[in-house]
Image 1 (tube, rainbow, N blue to C red):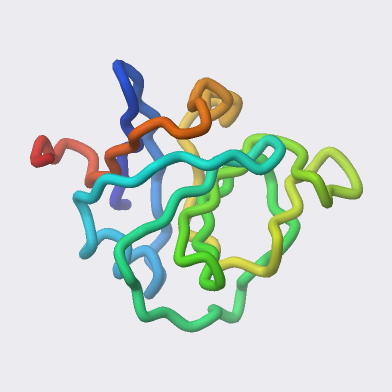
Image 2 (cartoon, one colour; image 1 turned 180 degrees about the vertical axis):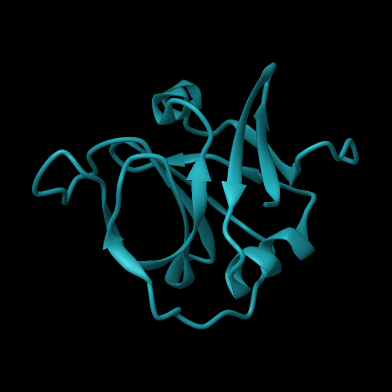
Length: 129
């Protein structure tokens, strides 16, 4: 299964992607640079313009560490915990999002990404900037 890396400063998180139309579109757009935004315990960041449709398995409430694509914000959504609209311990996204995959390892490693951080999103092993 394909993987992406999310890099900032001297840190890196890896995610394993599912084989979905949205995941394939994201991979085709890599590498790209973006800026981290925070919404509760979620990092989100804009991506290059992707022409995607809401997939049949899109979800609003997900497990921590789920890698999502938010169509309305043209952004990756990377939750590791509660968001401002969560009703329980699970992340609740602003609206239903396409599920792309999962963060490898502990999703709380995303909490180390500060708001405004410069992020590099690339295929795992790709060293292009």
